[in-house]
Image 1 (cartoon, one colour):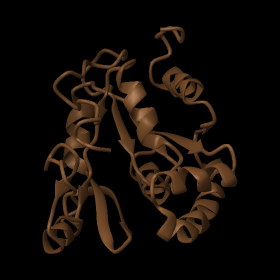
Image 2 (image 1 turned 180 degrees about the vertical axis):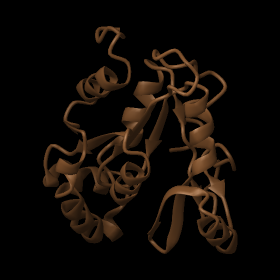
Image 3 (image 1 turned 120 degrees about the horizontal axis):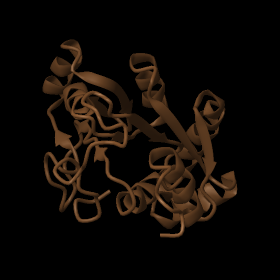
Length: 206
């Protein structure tokens, strides 16, 4: 997700409906690459107040990406130092690069009573559930593998599509370990279903 499209994170977020300090809720939105997690997050940001966690990565910034907004861009040595120090809530290696969720920022927002949303890969979601059992895990599925293939091809991932599809099939087998499973066929309907989990008091016809 580019800096231009990324929802604002902390400054505009308000305390969750639970109301008291330390009552923020942690939500994890996950699913196979290409399933539309980023699009769901962008729409959710218009309908609900939350802090969108910023991940750290060892890959190089893409044009237009901003450190601390899109990702925290770290060298591999620094990333592994943070890993040894237990500073990641979850981490994974993907396409030769390391990715992780800094623990302190998540805990700070939760401690302020602000809901936090993580958009991460499936294995990372499993790590979060182990570290924070109260987290709500939401698995976004494609209408079909064929549709997922078309979406990947549509965004220019054709050179890597076979490996991504194989990984997606393996990840779909873990969907039953999540708290909720939502099929992303029609984006507006998907957002409505996720919104019921994040902010059930918000009317769906907004």
